[in-house]
Image (cartoon, rainbow, N blue to C red; front, side, top):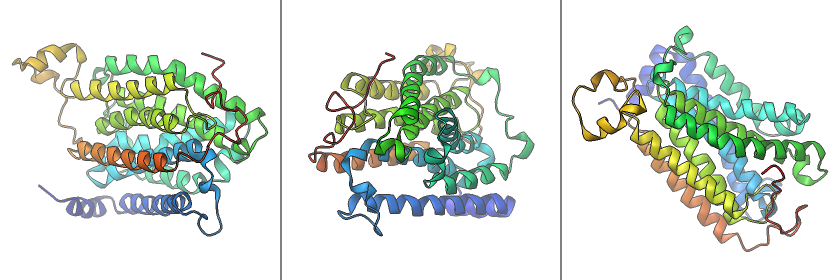
Length: 336
């Protein structure tokens, strides 16, 4: 079995421009992530930037970080057999499409996407995708026969509250004259809603490399639910019921994806679990989905635990003291 180093070397040999673009984009994203992390953990900020030290922005800041995390995970998947991980490449683009759409719908592209690090990472990710070694065969693994209808049904169910969440944040970005809107924060939350829908829909279509997208699609709402529970007074945080619902849906989505990963059609799930013979024609073909997907999941769960420890340690600073929504749970849900 080749090591990751050998596979990266092979990628450089077969698609040098693409591999270089992946590493450069990851490098830029890593530098930005390190700066944001230092702004959060250092008491007086980093290089004179103190935005991350304000606990009233925790939900917005962490959610924006989750959007970057989606792109990072998609790009990391390209380091190993990128031609077998087109789902990861598409997933890396979704957050920036969500931010652009949120900016357009809120008539505030400048504050949602231009004045933050998105302006650096988004075009780099697009260029990387255009250099993908699959070329014109990029969408070859998309077909109706691959669709997981159970996962798709879960996406449709979740789309109703997610779109409501997105619409409310778009309206806040357009109309509320507060610090959050001035920094594009409500646009970030709207983009998050679009991203969850987009990534989970991509996972349900099951193109090559889809398992990583399924894990990310389930972890994203779980993270938002946990962050909302940790900071119930922040603007845009979910109330307790919706936070628990988001966590439950995220876990359910991952469970369904894992239970149905080996069959082309979920209708054969019972036979597959029983180990019936003769199921080979319906098995998911060996598309090169990396076995490291589970490792990625473990890494994400570890990061989640670290986030929770950080938030719980810093959660006693009264994050709801200066919010436009008072202490009513932090987030209005007029559409639900």
